[in-house]
Image (cartoon, rainbow over all chains, first blue to last red; front, side, top):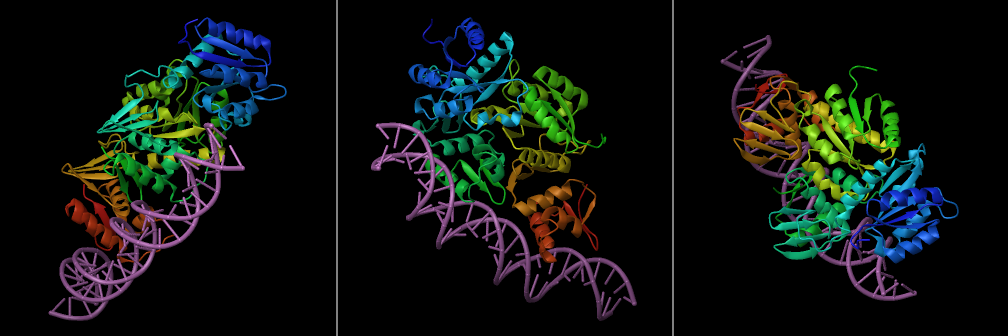
Length: 233
Length: 233
DNA sequence: ACCGGTATTAACATAAAATTAATCTATTAA
DNA sequence: TTAATAGATTAATTTTATGTTAATACCGGT
C-alpha cells in the first residue's frame, strides 16, 4: 500500500455493502478502513485520520446524522470529507445531512463505475488541501496584484507576507475576489458566505470588510454605496 | 403550459434533487427540463434555449464548471443565466464558478421558499434588461453610442472613461437606455426606479436627470415636455 | 472550566446620496 | 405679448448607508 494513498473510512451496518465498497475502492488504490457502527467508526476516524468518510445514514443505535455531528466535533477531522450513503428514493428533505456537516451524498445502489468517479471527484475537489502539503504549484492559488490567495491553506499573502485570515473574512475575500470588478450586493454576500437561513445583523458585513481592509490594505475593496462591494480590478 | 413561461433547465446527477427542484418550480409556473449529466444538459440547452440553467457543480465525469464553460461557448445561450448549485462548505469552488461564466450560486440544501424567491430574482434580472433580441449587447453590458453601461460592475464608460454613478442615477439611466427612443413618463420612472410605495416630490426626477446629463453629457437624454424623458437613439 | 480568538451586536460618527426648497428659464396657449 | 405651466438649476437640507470602535457573545481547543 502506497503511503500517499487516500484513506477512506466506510461506516455501514450492512457487511455486504462494506464488502462491495471495500472491494471496488481498494482496486482503485485507496486505503480502506471499515466499521459496522457509529461508535466504532468514530474510533477508527480518530486513529487513522482519513481523507474521506462514507457514512450510511440508516443505522441502528447511532444513525449517520448523529455520527456525522460527532465526527465533525473532532478538530483533527476538520478537513475530512464526509459523504452520506442513502437509499434511493429517500425524501430529499429528510436528508438533513448537509446541516450536520456532510459534504455530499451517494445513493445506493450505486454501480462501481459511478461510485469510483464520484469518489474521485470528491477527492479531487477537496483533496488538494488534504494531501500534498508541500506542493508549491499554484493549484488553488489566486493572484490578484500584490495579493496571493491560497484556498488550501486559508492564507493570504500581501507582498509575500503571509496572513492567516479567520474563516468568514477569508471566504468573503474569496467571494469578491472571484470576479474583480463585479459588485456583490449584501444579499449576494450573505447568501454565499453566511448561507440562506442564518440571520445576522446589518453591520456584520461592514465589520468584516473593515477587518479585511485593515489586513490586506484599503486599496483592494471599494464600496458602491447603496449597492454593495467590489474587489478592484 | 403557457408558452410565455420562463424555461428552466436543471442539470444534476442526483435524481432526488432534480425531483425536488422540478416539483417546486413547476408549481410556480415555470417550464422545467432536466438532465442527469453535463453532456445531456448541453444537448437540452441547445434544443430549448432556456432562460435559466441550474447547474450542479459536483457531478461525475463532466463537472459543473466544465459544463458551464461548454455552455457559455454556445452563442445562442449568451443571454441565459447560469446559477450553480453547491453544497454548503464547498465554498472553494466559487472562484472557478464565476470565471467559468456563472451568474450566481444557490447552496443546497435550500428551502423551497428561498429557492423560489431567488429564482424569481434571477429571472427578473433577465427579463428586465437582457430580453432585447437585436441589440449588440453582451455579457451584461449595454452599448449605446459612446456609452457602455455595465450593470454587473455598476459602471458607465463615456468614451472609455469609467464613471461610478450613484444608485438612483444608475438605475434611471439603465431604465431609459433600455429602450432608446421610447419616452418614459415620470410615472414610469417613479414606479420602476423608486417603486410604487415611496412618495417623493416633483423635482426629484429633474434633479437626477440633471446630474446624469452633467456626467454623461447633454446629448443623450432629451426632454419631451409634458410627457417625460427619453434616451436618444 | 477556562482561555484565546472569532463573530456578532451595539452605539455612534461620518460621508455620500437623495430630496426638497427656492428661484430661474423656456415653452406654450390665450 | 403675456400669463401660465413645465422643467432647469442651484443650493440647502434631510436621510440613508456605511464606517468605526468597543463591548459582548460564542466556540473550539486545552
